[in-house]
Image (cartoon, rainbow, N blue to C red):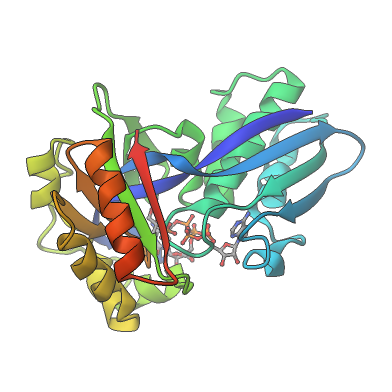
Length: 284
Ligand SMILES: C[C@@](CO)(OP(=O)(O)O)[C@H](O)COP(=O)(O)OP(=O)(O)OC[C@H]1O[C@@H](n2ccc(N)nc2=O)[C@H](O)[C@@H]1O
Ligand SMILES: Nc1ncnc2c1ncn2[C@@H]1O[C@H](COP(=O)(O)OP(=O)(O)O)[C@@H](O)[C@H]1O
């Protein structure tokens, strides 16, 4: 049995530069990956392809435990590119909230590709795996790298950030799913349209992160008031240096000087936001 972690992705910044002719949006985003919020994927090579799902968010992912699961989609995309690829049975423990802006499904897909590579003696950097990642979903190439990176284009451009200093953070999610296509739709950009306020991605220093933004925050807040509630609660925690939304939401995160402050903030948030999923973690 082979095992892989599938860590949650956090968009530290997310600038939408415009909309491409194919309808997807051109992004410039700094992403990092959580040490403590991760799904777990196991794989046993065998005939055929199968998946079982358990864990705290298995039910939330229940509607996708079938053929549409991104684990199975990634495996099919890899098999279509790599003749003779040996497949098998995947078991997923779902600990990342679903449709949360944390790229949980993408992380699972990337973990599946890593396991298939390992089981078949294929290098993790094999271009066919990278192509399979991009064909599975926009966030999957970044999740394949699974370390702090600048993500560009639809998500296919991934440049790891050299010398990234890990950040102490708290993640908070109201456990209400948010549809990624709906949030992009609310930007109301026409295919081919570019935004005048384009900005290059900053470096990952705190001052640059604070000066940047998440362009999906406004449309997401217009859909779900909990996002504003979460951001305000984070901003009020002691030592919070930055409070922002990740991806298309609804997860919000706070950055702190050290792990101790982040853990203290998580305790305060659990009291302030009953019923929310709250997780202190390092981002790398
Ligand atoms: C917004 C981001 C930011 O990292 O994260 P999440 O909120 O999903 O975690 C990603 O771009 C989401 O990536 P992912 O969830 O893989 O998206 P996909 O399955 O490829 O696309 C879902 C839908 O989102 C829209 N979409 C996605 C990516 C992109 N660059 N432009 C888009 O317009 C399209 O409407 C597409 O049909
Ligand atoms: N392994 C998976 N885990 C979670 N969601 C999945 C998975 N496979 C497919 N999905 C589908 O992908 C959608 C987005 O899920 P997820 O990756 O959790 O969202 P986000 O990127 O916003 O955090 C879900 O609504 C679900 O229908």
